[in-house]
Length: 210
Image (cartoon, rainbow, N blue to C red):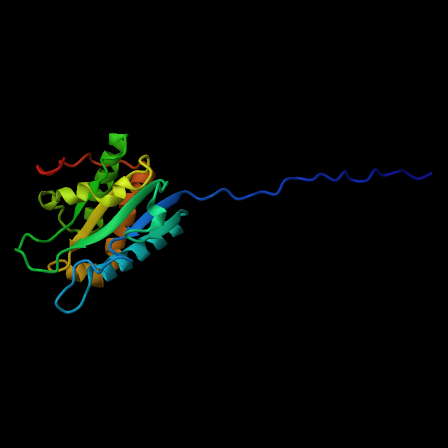
């Protein structure tokens, strides 16, 4: 009589469902709503914002994140939950003076954990300045930036910031011809925050800040 071989038992393992990748929100300022600033040659703020935002989205996707590209008044902003949300804007096309150049950042004060807003702001400032070489201009930050409508629409635990990446007059060359550097600066700031990278510290707020 030959050896009897027991059949291999069949085990029904559950199907493995991939975990959702960490989510980040990027708002292309004015998109789906209005043109934003309009230059004399027809260049609009919204087209520059969209170009930067799309590049930031792709960089962050390549880094392993799920990234929502959102419009200015996107219904998905209501109670939006994510690792972070950043809204991308640009400043005036008009020549104001020789100091009307550079960028500014304002983080949401709605988040109940103030230190998270501080870290996000510091990360955005330090990394964007390093990538672009542009000057940080806190003196030109307006109360409207701190009271940006999106801050009150998203889930209040989602850290958020708005960045004016430059002036469409004196900074036009880097914004339109070296958009990759601008997008890298924004993405680097976001990655600095979500990866808890070191920064030199919280930058002082302008005197007109709340």
